[in-house]
Image 1 (cartoon, one colour):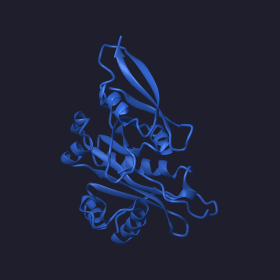
Image 2: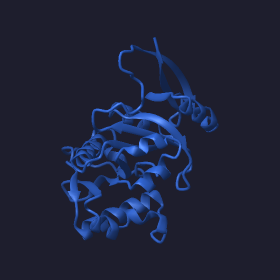
Image 3: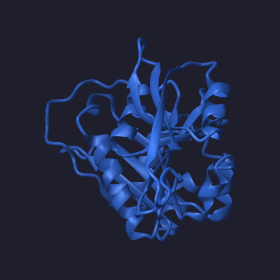
Image 4: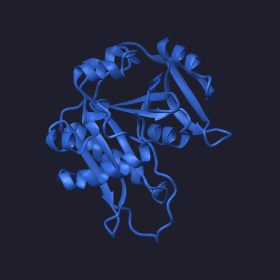
Length: 248
């Protein structure tokens, strides 16, 4: 499931950017999941979302980290989950990019930022905290999914060093999801550079629309990766720049 933002809330007075902290207590975890589930519309009885339940998060601290940012009044400002995927889970998520499943993958998901706290750097802080946690737990690749109608989040991900490598559908999202990854160690993940050769890149710029799934999927399968995302003419349009390496 992709990362989302909360519905609009009444504006609060300006205050310093809260620092996300790792939450491990069951009561604090329940408080966040109750809030986030209401935003995502998650059914607590859905067994496919076990790793989002408070009990699972609290008892799997070796593979799951929940970071939450609080305001001065202890109100939740935002939060996000990072989970080390098993090999089976990684293969299910990256079935079109199975070559990446040799990596130890940390998925970034279940993120919510209140509307009045967007565009202040909180989402980036949540990402940085989770990247640090993922590295400390041995992950070699970060994975995130962004809805194709969410150009602001797509742009933020490319600024954070992620690239888009695929597109897929998800039963919990209304729109297709762009698959974004970021190497956490020095590695030749995408095969863009080969020793003793000088890469030459070709670029394609395209507008991502509701009917772009097949076209994008074909480009990703041909080795293109999305390196930049901008907001298009509408607030739900992504203008995506893709790159592919050639050998000189």
